[in-house]
Length: 210
Image (cartoon, rainbow, N blue to C red; front, side, top):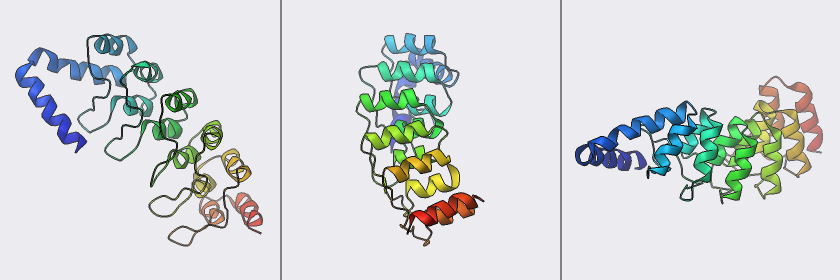
């Protein structure tokens, strides 16, 4: 639906304001290349910071995905930015910041009111697989649900056990994430670790279940 709305809006712009239509291309090109000067100029001229590209990706999430941290900071500073705007995959900017390890921007998103918890995949799921365990700590301190269930019943601890750092696993366990839980396939966090070839970590998680 978001993509359809964008396509309609863009069609109207092209027909009625052809001189403005080019700014969409300029804006998203600048976002992808971390060209903060161009982005700031367009925002100052009234360009919508919550615009989405042709694939339904909001500008802020796109910046976070592509490592355009200066543009991300500029968008976050805009008074009308929507910190929980979702993309076509139902991902929020905070989820993308967590996945990509942008700790400073994750903190700023929380300051702007981004939701720590949400149904289905949560920011903590994404942080658990990301490169910076400090974001796991940040989300846990802000009330992130330690045993949040993804659509297939997996928890952040399960994902950290297979894909994340051992520091992330330790932080989740310290926060009292439950290592006895099983997902819809009957797998525990220890099973996830074994699937990732992390047998020593699996043994630690098995011990934590007792």
